[in-house]
Image (tube, rainbow, N blue to C red; front, side, top):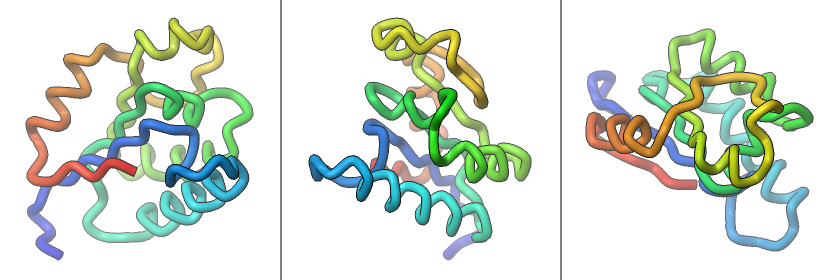
Amino acid sequence: MNANKSIVVVFKSDGMGATDAQPLRVTLAHKFLALIADAEPLPKAICFYTDGVKLVCAGSPVLTELRTLEARGVHLVICQTCLNSLGLTENVQIGIVGGMADIITAMWGADTVITV
């Protein structure tokens, strides 16, 4: 992969995939984040909206992986409207709470956007 390519990953659910099996979605997200935390190049940003914001909140099973990614310079951008709507604003553990404009800016600045 081109090391100069800018990638943004988007989480729009509290895991990966469209299955109703939440444990499977979480397992897949855990593995995905752990593998990209050890990969090169890293994504420029990971954006979280709708139920995806649950992944950055207290009790999330992927906080360790997200902390590793953030420590390596990956921007974690969280939708404030979604947090407010879900009543999770006070539960955020990591990342930068922003608006949809911040998510759009991250996406527009990327060569590739991957939605999981």
